[in-house]
Length: 111
Image 1 (tube, rainbow, N blue to C red):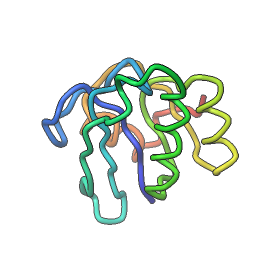
Image 2: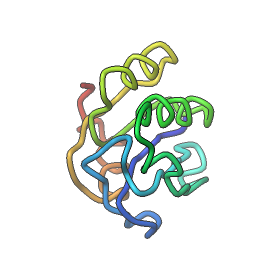
Image 3: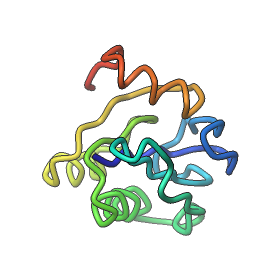
Image 4: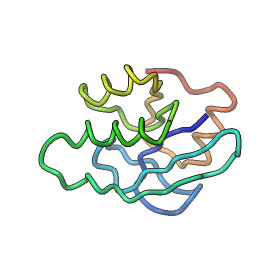
């Protein structure tokens, strides 16, 4: 199972969640089975004028993510994630290691 996390910085497991979904600086893809980050990607869509959320949601789906943890996606991005079967956990702040730990403990709630 892969988790999509929009983050502010490229500090690996200690990266801070971004309060923006589509305009986050980086994305982390975390693999729960491997218990590690499998990809950190600079957000190439961040400065786009239109359709940024759609592109970011499409990226998460293309990366075969099953979950999104972090900022609330916009309505169009949320629809894409929903139809692709990607569940969203809305977390407004935190460090990747902490939110992954909370997810494993069952503390996070679906949106």
